Each structure stands twice: as C-alpha cells, then as structure tokens.
Length: 347
Image (cartoon, rainbow, N blue to C red; front, side):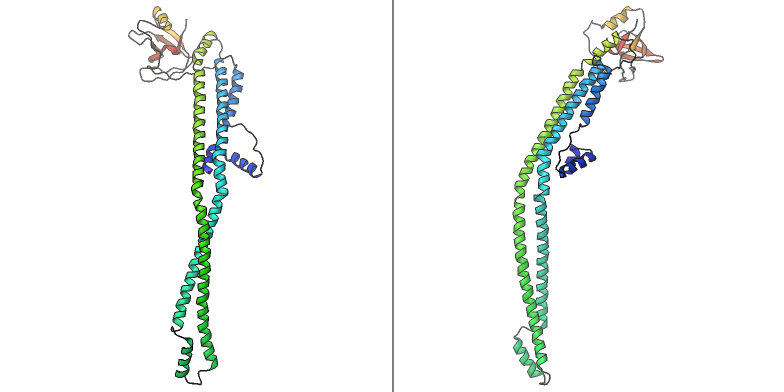
C-alpha cells in the first residue's frame, strides 16, 4: 500500500500533508500537479513569443496537451484512491488489526495451555515419588507397627498425612488449571478460525479492487498516449511552416529555430527518376559551387556525411551520380554529403 501511494504521489511532503488533512477530517486543498504547472509555463511562454509564430504556437499546443495530461493524472489518482487504496486501507485498519489481535491472543492461550500441561506433569511426578500407590491409612498402620511406640506420636502422623494431602491437592489443582486452559484455548481457536475463514471473501473483494486499479491505470496510459499522438499530428506541419517564416523574415535575428527529427538517408523524401528538386535545378543551372545557409541542425549518420549547425553558411555543389536529395557540402577542410531539405541557397 505504501509503495502504491509513493507511485501515485512521489512527493513525501504532499503525502504527509494529505495524511494530516485526512486525520483532521478536512478537505485537501486543490493544487496543480507537475504536468499542469509545465503546461501553464509553456502557454505563457508561447504567448510571449507570439501565437502567430510557429514556435509560440507550438509551445501553446504543447502546454495545452500537458494540462490535459495533468488532468488525466488527477483522474487516475482519484480513481485509484477510491477503488484500490481506500478499501485496502480500511481492511488494514479494521479486519486485519482484529485478526492480528485474535491470533496473538491465541498464541498466548496456547502458551498458557502448555504451561498448565507442564505443571500437571511435574505434580504427578512429584506425587508418585513421594509415596507408594497405596492407602495412606495402611502406611500409617505399618509405621506404627515397625516404629517404636514412643516415636509414633500424633504430630508425626499428622505431618505425614498433611504432606500426602498437599501433593494430592497439587495434582487436583493442576488438573483443574489444565481443563480451564484447554477450554479457553479451544474457544479462542474457534474465534480465530471464523475470522480467518472470512479472509477468502476479503481476497475476492481485493481482487476486484486490483482489477479496477489495473483498468484505471490502463485507461490513464491509453489516454495519455492518445493526447501525445494528437500533439504529434498538430506539430507535424510546424517545421515547413517555420522554414517559410525564416525565408520571409530572414532579417529577424531573434527567431527561434525548431530542429526537426534527424533524417537518415532512407527517411528523406524520394523523387521519381528524371525529377529534381527546385534547389538542385537551380544549382545545376549555375556555373559552379554555391553558398547555402543551414536551416536546421543535422547530425551526420556516417563518415560520408557532414554535420550541420543552424544558421551557418557552407559551400555546396552538385556531384554527378549523387542522390537527387543530397548535395556535396564543404566547410573549410571538412567535406561530406548534406540533405537539400536542410539548406537554403543564397544569391
């Protein structure tokens, strides 16, 4: 149960605060979770950059999605608390404590029973050793016959009979205590047995609660996945839109570039035979190498490619036989293939 609470609320200070509010029977104040805080910050930053810009619009959409994730997380935590934690906590604080108490009491009764059996055994052994198994009056008569008359006084006979009676009473008391201990043990064993028989129904109830918890968790992750898929679709058009914004407002030095995912050669768009991109046609029609500005960062996939940094200017040229989506780029003494989609040819 504690580990489940840690998963649902990793912050120990918040867990302690919720525990105190619960003990005081007060409502826990509503607070924004981490996803909602991140979403609000993204939305505020997006409005500062401007909703009309690609980056500002992307920030706003990401912020709205983060707030949706936060809302889904709250619903999951609330559902898990009602359907799983609360029944489990009620069992721990109620039936489980009762069962544990009765089991401890049963152990005490068993120890009392064992002690009573031990006392009875010792009493019987001592009684057997103190005198032979015959009538005490016959023993007194034998003593009077064998011992001189002056030694068979009333005090001696009285002492002997008292000792005999004491051992008999000790055995009788031990037997009585054993019967009482056995009766109390049997009664407590029956109580504990009835409580433990109810565990099977409790297990069935907790199994249903566990299924509800798993269903809520599966629904939560599926909902989050759907939110992120929708966000990916919304952000799919931002790189090309932002590229157009750069072309039309190249003078803005404070614009933020959004780097698209790294494209391996197999991921770049392919062209049909005989068809060339506009940038390549323009380069082929020129007399030699051209300068090009890098639009996005690019990490080389192998040694034949050249890594790029956004806004740097490199020299590019067309090489016969090369894939139509690639050019040969040069930066100082470094040389390698670069993707056309990451470049903007300069006049």
